[in-house]
Image (tube, rainbow, N blue to C red; front, side):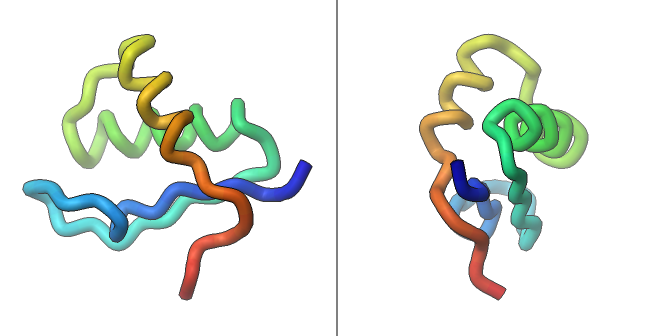
Length: 64
């Protein structure tokens, strides 16, 4: 299994955010994404939010 990532620059929102998060496992990445999403973007940690975020994971590493 290779690295996966999610990059806030790929999404429009009220908060201008340039954070990209990557990890070796889905579980580690999901935990980091949920923490970031809650603290910075105000999302609630719900099963629906977690499932939505998992679908957005990309293979590889984010662009610089």
